[in-house]
Length: 217
Image 1 (cartoon, rainbow, N blue to C red):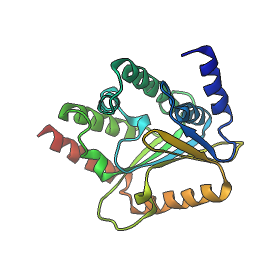
Image 2 (cartoon, rainbow, N blue to C red):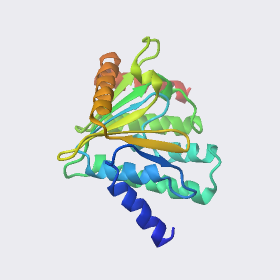
Image 3 (tube, helix red, strand yellow):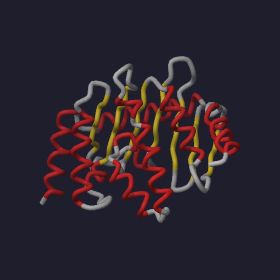
C-alpha cells in the first residue's frame, strides 16, 4: 500500500467520531476496517450482535480465510486480510487491561458451513476457549424467539472512557459509523432486548459444545 493511501486511511480512522462517517470499500483494505481497528484499540467495552457468523474478534484463521476465499478474493489479498484480522484480536487477549467484550451470537452461526467440518470444529472449540476468559462473555441467541431488533442485522457498539460511544455496522462492501446520541441509545436498547433473549453464559457454552459434536459426526 502506498504511503499516501495508508496515511489517508489512518486519518479517516482518527476522525471516526465525526457525525455520519459513511465508508465504502477500497480495492485493498476497506476504509471501515481502519475505523474498526481504531475503535477496538481505544474502546473500554465492546458489545457485538452477530446473527449469522462468528464475530470477527473470535474467528480462527481458517474460518476467516474460508470466508475471504468464498468471496472471491485473490490468495494474496485473502492472506493479507486474514493476518490483519488476526492482529486485531490482541485487544481482547492482551494480559494488561483487555477490552471487555460481550458477544451475542445467533444460533445459525454455529451451523452455517464456513469452510470444512474441521474448520467449524476448530472454530467452535475456540469459542469455548474464549468464553472462559474473564473479559469475554459469549451468549447464544436461539432461533424461533419471535421478532427482536437484532433480526434487522448485525452491529457493534463501542464504549469509550472519554468520548461518545459509536455504533458500527457493515454490509458486503460498505459500512457506517454512527455516533449520534439518539441512535446509539436505540442500539443500546437493542442490545438489552437481545440480551433478554440470550442463553446465559454456561448454557451458551453447553450449546456450542453440542453444536461441535454435530460437526464432528
